[in-house]
Image (cartoon, rainbow, N blue to C red; front, side):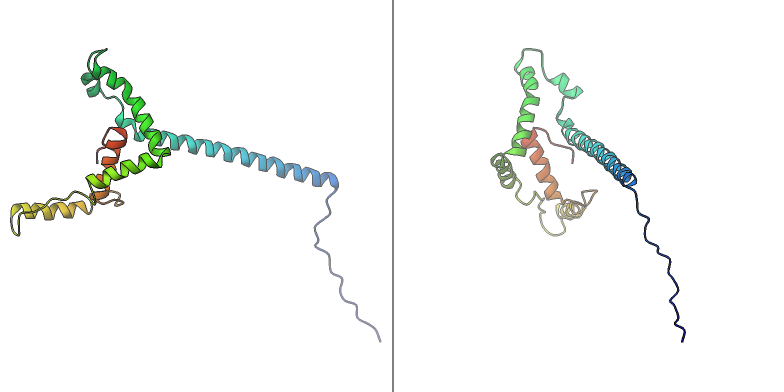
Length: 172
């Protein structure tokens, strides 16, 4: 009786690489990793620069304007000296707010005691023009933030925080 032989299968195993080919492949991979790390470092540096520029632009409103230049007074006057020291005071306040929980707590307490949950108008009774104004105001206050992230009370708190911490109130 004849025995049937199984058909031979061709091996699809990967060809063996020589030591030199393996070393070249590893070197290419290492160079690619280094290139990607360098590219990532450049992107992180760029992102940090954009973040710093964005944060510093938030405080440009507190800088000197043409109107303030006219109002600061002649050199040597107390108004002029106060104007010169303003940037130093703003920078100290920014640093304290970022690094001191006590200072930040003082600012938060002042805001809580000044605004509470938010300043709201009060009407004079049903059907009066003042009552109608209160209704219109409350309707607007619910959608006053274009981004729909904060209500009017929170915008008041942010404005007061800017004024207390940095000496200038942003336009809300």
